[in-house]
Amino acid sequence: MITNGLVPGATPAAASGPEHVEEPVAYDAILLASFGGPEGQDDVIPFLRNVTRGRGIPEERLEEVAHHYRAFGGVSPINDQNRELKAALEAELARRGIDLPVLWGNRNWDPYLRDALAEAHERGFTKLIAVGTSAYSSYSSCRQYREDYAMALAETGLEGVIQIDKVRQFFDHPGFVEPFIEGTRDGIAELEARGIPRARIHVLFATHSVPTDDAVRSGPRDRDFGAGGAYAAQHLAVAEVVMREVGEGVGWDLVYQSRSGPPTQPWLEPDINDAIEELPAKGIEGLVIVPLGFISDHMEVKWDLDTEALETAGEHGIDAIRVPTPGVHAAFVSGLVDLVLERRDGIPTADRPALTELGPWYDVCRPGCCENVRLGFKPALAGLEP
Image (cartoon, rainbow, N blue to C red; front, side, top):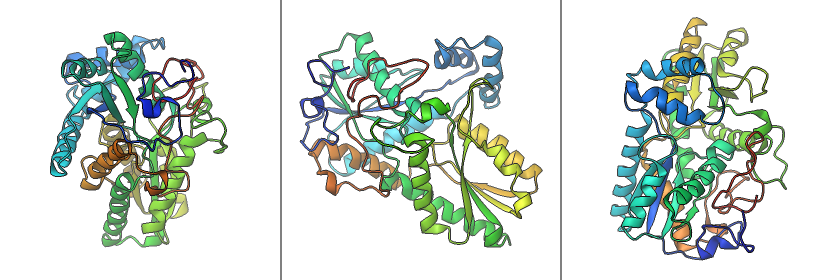
C-alpha cells in the first residue's frame, strides 16, 4: 500500500514510485531471496506445509509431492544452489572491488527472510537491494516476494528501520538470456552430431504453469499482453530471441509444467508431456528442452523435466536433451551484479540492456501488478498500491 502517496519501505529515490529509478542509492547490502527447500527426509512434510499454508491442501496430497523430494534423499538442490550463487556473487563483487555484502533468505525454509533481515539489522544495514531468484512477472515469481519482504519486516519489527528496493525483473537481461542461447545452440548441435537432421529437431521452452486467472493479471493493468498476461508474453519474447540466434530451420513451442491446482481450475497449457506426445506425428526425432522459466536446477527441473519429461520423450522414441539453467554461469552472475549497479548508480533507462521490446522492466512495480485472484492484495514492498 501507499502511505501519504509514497511506496512503503522504499528508499527515498524509489518512494515516489517512478517506473525507473535514475537516482543513485547508497545501498548497504544485497538481499538474495529464494524459495527454499528441505535438506533432509524429516524436513520434507514441514517444508511442504510451509509452501501450501492457508490453501487447505490435504496431507495425502502433500505425501504425493513429497515423493519427488524423497526420491532425492529428501534434499532439494535449491539451497546448495543458492549457496553457490551467493558465493559467486560475492566473488564477482570482490573482483570488481564493490563492497556490498550478500545476505540470503528464503520464503519457505531456513534461512528465512526474517533471519536475513535480523542479520542486516545486527550489522547496521538499513538500505537493501533485493534480488529475487525468478526472472519473470507473476504472483509467485514477483509479487509474492514483495509480500515476503513486507511480512519479514513486520515479523522482525524493522518497519521504518530497514528499507528494501528490488532490481527489475530480468527475463530479457543479456546475462539471463545468454546461457540459454548457448545451451540451446549446443543442444541442437549435439542432436545433429547424433545424426538427426535439423528439420527433425524441435525445441520446447518450459516454464512453471500458473492459474490462468493469475496469468492474465501478471504485469501492470494498463498494458495488454494478451491471453497469458505479461508472464506468457515475456517467455514468448525471450524464446523468440533465443531461436533468432540459434534456431534457423528448427521449430519450437512454449510449454508449461509443474501444475499443482485442482482439475477444475484452468492453468496455462499445454503441459510439456502432452506436447512431447504429439511430436512423433510431426516427424520429430530430436528434442531440446530449455528450462526457460528457471534460474537453477531445483526440484521442478530435476523431477518434472529430468525425470518425467525425459521419460516421456524416451517412451515416444525421441532423443531428448535438457539444456542447463543459468546457475552460476559467468554471464548470469555478472548480469545480476549489473542489475544491482543499475540501481546503486542510477543508470539512465536508455542505457539499460534489454533483449526484447518489453524491457527494460519496471524498477517499481505498477499498481495492481500480478494480483493473486484467490488471495487478493496483501501489503507488498517495492511497488505501488494495491
